[in-house]
Length: 274
Ligand SMILES: [Zn+2]
Image 1 (cartoon, rainbow, N blue to C red):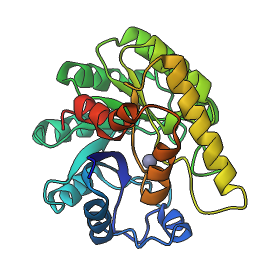
Image 2 (image 1 turned 180 degrees about the vertical axis):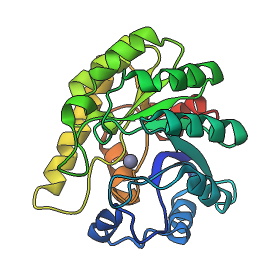
Image 3 (image 1 turned 120 degrees about the vertical axis):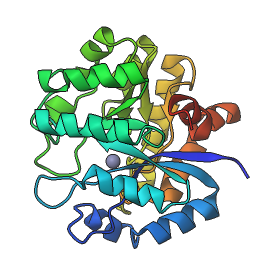
């Protein structure tokens, strides 16, 4: 069985989790037990766990993400979400320091928070991430709620940061959907910029199959443009996308089998030191 790493998973086991509506759409129980079972069945060796949004404007506290990871028997590694206030930035860095052996990356919720990527509130945190060699994941593209800010979530807003922070590993979540070409240019241009293919499909509409073909074409073309698949990382965004749909998307890519291996685990293993 081939190895797989899922670089984008959410979980809270709380009833006020705002992703429950996606879990329902996908007929998922959205529990640690279900997730562990599915990972085992599909040969997903490791996963990165990110805080889900909760009802209201908040997120699941990062220490609960660390606790859930501890219950996963070494399968899940925490990603610390950094919100744009001086207090939350300090708390995130402190938590990362205290859990250095476990924490694998940070996440910034562009498009959901009232700050842009180059907002000064993040600069101390970027210094820290850069100095520790910890990658930073950025939400990019379409937002899960209609209140999201697409201008701040646009992939091109990362170009300036990547220019200034050449030592920081930047990962664009969701390939900047629907701005696949802009993301292709960023991963081609910057040695330190990557993109994950998580959370691109949800539920089963009339055009679900056509849409998934369109996605496979867009991602394949981005790989042709970049000239290789070194910068593309697999993720599900569980419970937003079902594991079966996320894996079917990789299968549909019109690229070498060796490149699919890179996407499914090799790139993530290298980037997150898993
Ligand atoms: Zn996500």
